[in-house]
Amino acid sequence: IFAAVEMAPRDPILGITEAFNADSRTHKVNLGVGVYYDDNGKLPLLAAVKAAEKARLDAMPARGYQPIEGLAAYNQAVQNLVFGKDSPLLANGQVITIEALGGTGALKIGADYLKRLVPGAKVYISDPSWENHRALFESAGFEVGTYAYYDAATRGVNFAAMKASLNAMAPNAVVVLHACCHNPTGADLTDAQWQEVVQIIKAKNLIAFIDMAYQGFAEGIDADAVALKLFAASGLQYFVSSSFSKSFSLYGERVGALSIVTASKEESARVLSQVKRVVRTNYSNPPTHGGAIVAAVLSSPELRQQWEDELAGMRERIRAMRIALVEKLKAHGHDFAFVAQQRGMFSYTGLTAQQVERLKDEFGIYAVSTGRICLAALNTRNIDHVADAIAQVLKA
Ligand code: PMP
Image (cartoon, rainbow, N blue to C red):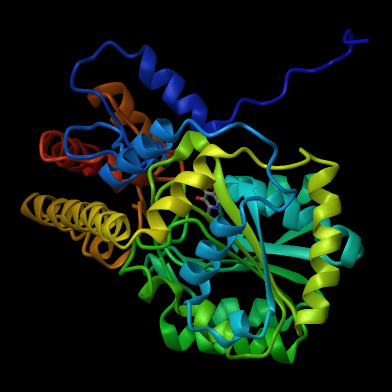
């Protein structure tokens, strides 16, 4: 039965890590990843997480099944974080939230449910977008197109073109939006631009699917949720996927959530019943550990404060690396000021595929061929090497 099976293409980003791991040069740097490393180049285990895990281990809980929608305390904590605990949407019962297997799992459950809800709709992702967005929605059966987003000339957003794309969409088209820290470009919308996007989505009867994988990595927990606040005030119904992979450094525990905003509490009950069917036929119910840890941290005032401080530490370290890279490249005569304007883990540097290749071959620095680099992989010990190498490959 497998005789005619073809080899699937390798995941482009995981392929970079494989090549990096096989490289024996000691000064090698992997800027291709989408992971936060600390200044020692290590994946952090947050102290708040450690404390919650210790308490859980000491309690030795039995390992029963979770409800299909996951742990209630976790879902509640997600809603408070994503929508703000005083949101009228929550008070009105207009939001349903299910625990999902990371942000990816939330997107997949949302996509599968949307396919049942609006089977003929077309899905649009930003140009460019996180590469898995297209694959996820296509595997749910949708035709996936793009809307204009990145402007290579300014290394920011081409907002006029983005609006034109949105305005040209048919009613019920699904628009996947990055709430903050756009992956891969680092270019985000301003608050005023978000306001306009919400108005167009409403006027054109589009369906927003807001992907928030990096809450807290741009400005802060509340500031990064500005798009959510504007959508909340719009009276629209929409989807939100969120993730604690990065903000809790819990990548492998697969802790995310799908939230759906409906028109009423009664509608919420019906929608939840349908989303639960999608989950039941996928993986039945989510794993316990990650959600329990996040719920424990977010519901304890001390641990929550500790987590917010640790999250701020990650955010500020990335910001410091952005500024340092700009300054070091300036000393080499290159204007990379845009790197300090972009937000989150990534930057579209404008480096060509050829320059990225030279970074790898001559300097042991790995990046994505599109010129995307992960600022969270820079640290005080490798940044000089990286800045010098970029300056070298920029020489004609
Ligand atoms: N959306 C975006 C934009 C992302 O960058 C990522 C993670 N790289 C995800 C979703 C998925 O997150 P998770 O690892 O929690 O599945």
